Picture 1 (cartoon, chains in turn red, yellow):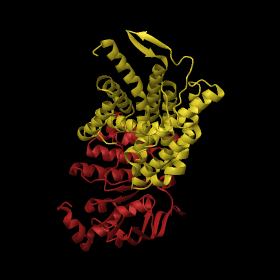
Picture 2 (cartoon, rainbow over the protein chains, first blue to last red; picture 1 turned 45 degrees about the vertical axis):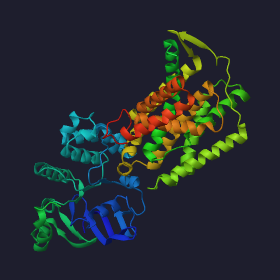
Picture 3 (cartoon, rainbow over the protein chains, first blue to last red; picture 1 turned 90 degrees about the horizontal axis):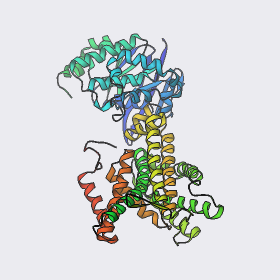
Picture 4 (tube, helix red, strand yellow; picture 1 turned 60 degrees about the horizontal axis):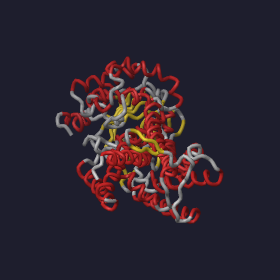
Length: 243
Length: 294
C-alpha cells in the first residue's frame, strides 16, 4: 500500500441514542483526492466532523501519518494538519477578508509563514486581494467559498476536508470550484471531498467511498464508480432533481 | 424649572454618570458575546472593586486613581478565576440557565460577603479634590466625574483597539460569531473565554474605581447597577464596544432628566419602560440594523 496519510478504522459515531456511523473505514492516500458520496443523512458530514474532532467517536480509530487523533480537541487536530472547511462555509461574516485569512493562520506554527501563505491565496484568488478590507459577509456565494478554501490553505494543512463546496453555487461557479480542487491537488494537496454533485466529484476523485445509512457500501476508483450501473442509478440519476 | 443652565447641568451629569453604565455594559457585552452568559453579578463585582479602592485609600492612603493599577490587575485575575472556577463547565453547555444561575448565586454571595466585611452602611472615597468643581459656559463640572468620563472613554478605546488590532482580539470576535468555526481555525475556546472574562471583569474594576470616586456605594447597590448596565447594553446593541458606551450614556441621560422633570420614582419607571420599548421595537439596539447578529 502506498503512503496512507489518513486512516479511519472501524468508526462508530452516535448523536445521543442515534447511531450515525457504523464501522466506517476509509483511507486517504497522500496527494490524492478522495470523494465521499451518498444520499442526505448517509453520514458524510458526520464522518468529517468526527475526523476534525467536532464530535467524538464511540469506537474505532482515526490515524494521521501514523499518529492517533482519538480524543483530541478540534484545535489540536488543526495543529496536527487537518483543516475542515465545513458545510455552508462558516466564514466570520462580520470580520474582514483579511481577518478571516489571519485566523486561518492562527496556529502558532503557521504564523511565521503568514506572508507567503497570503501571497499563495491571493495568487489563487485575485478577487480576494482587491477586497481584503471588505467584510466577508458582503461577498457573493462563490467568493465566499473561495475565501473559505483560502482560509483553510493558510493553515498549511496536510489534509483539506471540503464539505459540499459547490452547494448553492451557479453551474459556472460549480465548474470553477471543481477546477480549483484539481489545481490544488496538482499542487500536492490531499483532499477529502464530500459532494452532492456525485458526477463531478467522481470525475476528479482518485478514490471514492459510497456511504449509505452510516455504512460504507462501496469503494473504488472514482472512474470505476462512475461507470458502475448501481451507483449511477442510485445517485447520479437524481442529479436533475435538486435535493 | 425650564432653566437652561440647570438643564444643561443635568445633561452633563447624565453623560458623566451614564459613562459608568457604559463601561459595565461593554464588559457584559464581551462576556455575553463569546460565552452567552448573562453576567448579572457584574454590578456586585463593580461594588466589590469599589471597596478594594476604598480600602486601599482608607487603610494605606493610596490615591484612588493610583489604585486603578492594582485594582485593574486584581480584577483581571479575578475574571480569569471566575471563568476557571465557576463558568468553565457551564459555558460549554447549550443550556444557558446553568450559567445564569451561577451568576445570580455569585451576586448574592458577593452582596453578603461585602455586608459582612464592610457593613451595610454606605461608603465613599472622600479625597481632598473630591469636591473640586469648575465652571464651563455656566455649567458646573465636578473634577472626579469628568475624570470618570475620560477613563470610560479611554477604556472603551483600549478594548476596541484590542479587539480590532490583536490576533487574540480578532479571535474573540470570531468566537462571538461562531464558536465551532473558530475551533476549526485552531482557536482554543477556553483561552478566548479566559481573556474575555478577564477583560470584562477588568472593566468592572475600572467602573468600580470611578464609582468609588464619584458616589457613595453599599453592598446591595450592585444588582441595580447590573440591571442598568444590561439596559444600556440593550439600548446600544450587543457586540459593539462604542454602541454599549453610547447606550450607557443615553441611559444616564434618561435617568437624570427623568429625575429632574418628573421625580426619582418615575424616572426608574421610565427607564424600564424604555427598555421594554427598545426590546420590542429595536431588539438589536437602537444603533443596530434588524439583520445584525451578535
